[in-house]
Image 1 (cartoon, rainbow, N blue to C red):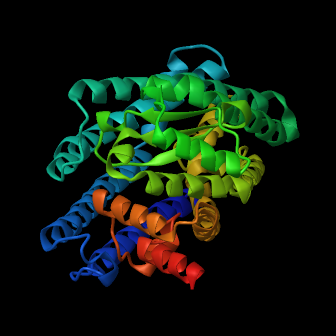
Image 2: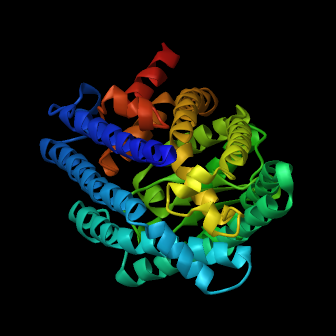
Image 3: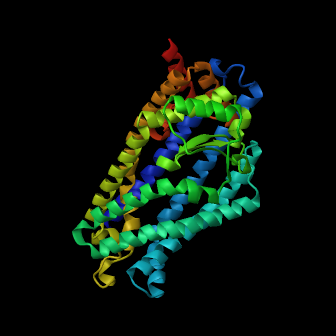
Length: 418
């Protein structure tokens, strides 16, 4: 049997089993007693609801992966990729058009298979726990907007990479990396003003005490803002959040309308101070630099496998049957299966660094905003309102969490004052 096929099947199965075990361990780690830090914030009924929400969402994810994983394996073994390739080639056209049709078919199949799960998650689970505010009309429009953006942006990027790997020789990986890096930075600048408004309405924050407090804090830290906006997060969910987006003259802070409704001005300034901390401590630059390096590594390793006949043979595309030239558009997708464990290892390192950065941003917020209690109360409200898991298993945290568990963050904040 093809060695690449054996390795790929092994990686798929091991990845599924690892995720299944981690989720199972996390479920068995659920704490039935309210942590002392949250006494008075949760009543017994609300805390029970948070545990039920954790159990239901986790089991749903386990069921979803238990269905999708065998389907992926069957699709590989039964020649699904070969069938899609024949279909794409039958339409005629050059290698780029064939590659776009090949990728489009796979994305469409993936989206259609995941659609029932997305519908159930949104309109059943999220609805049951009082989170969902998404109407059917919004859901449908979001679905097609995402498909359109994937077709336009993804199609341009995919076409460029195919062209490089068919025309640029041994340095194709380097040119692809440089081009993709340029596109990523370009999108960071334009997304706040072009892409994000396609999904949500952004309104300048009205003049008043909140805007004044935020602006005064930003000015005191020498942190310039292009604007302070509210986002209609309540259009889709009752969950709340805040974030910074953009760079330079497009840099802005966005507050969910649900966040403003539920938090005091001091708490909102503390949340803002945490985000400013990420910028001031250069966490954003660090993250971008890491992403650029990891993308470079990915393209370099891709260049080592893109011409391997065994990789194509594993998916039923024998290079000998395609005029001696590897269908690189397929190789780009097949390589993703091999790269999965490397991607996971990079993700583990990034999560470790990210959790460290969150502690540092919390400390920055407490030092500069000067209100430890407001920061703690903001974290507690966010956790309660979003029914967050207060006591995740350490293995779950290590493998998946980009933020430390809330109890650990609160403990670290209290130690700052001490």
